[in-house]
View 1 (cartoon, rainbow over the protein chains, first blue to last red):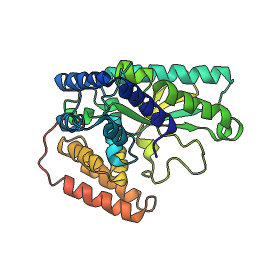
View 2: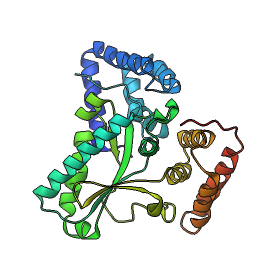
View 3: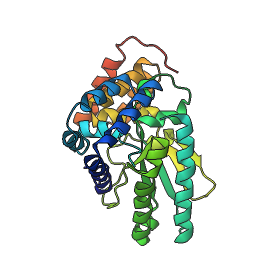
Length: 83
Length: 210
């Protein structure tokens, strides 16, 4: 089960992105950096590239999923450094 | 994760736990048990295969002495919560250092946190005593990590173990020894699944990755 503190933090991050859609660019930059520095497996880079094509609400729902897929997304999350 | 991130995490964890022990005058033993895919960094710092460095999370369980569980439940719950807050998903550490701690401690302490673990796992683990004589960092032997992954049985777990086998990290003889010793210790269906996956894994061509 997803911990309440993790759920809250994801919701807070997406509240900021929903208020200012430009913040999604930070996640995209993070992904590019992970890709360039080879710190994320290409399989997960491709997965995130696909996910970033989806609407913000859908991305948030995926990150909050209480499933194996949700765990993988949280374990490789690109949603860091969102001010 | 990277090896230097592991070093940083150990320093931060030790400091955080010591602060709580001092504040509440706790002198009973506390173990931090590392169990996830990134535990491999304890054993192979220069591992090349990026698939093994796929995750930004370090899984751990806090294990407290029975005296602490009995007499200081509030305090140890606070230690566990403080780790989530300071070093968990979405923490400042996650933002700044690009990794986080997945604290899997069950703070109900109703059943053993190590139920369904391979028998005698502790005798094979890497034990690191910290400057606080009551605090130890314990990292599961990579063979035990692999067996726990196969018990969990998710797609990513199979991929991880297959990579370890193909890379020559896991020794067939030791894996089978642990499986045979754990037959009465782990759910029978799960242990058979583990046995089959190990058998399949060693049929694959191998190439050293460390």
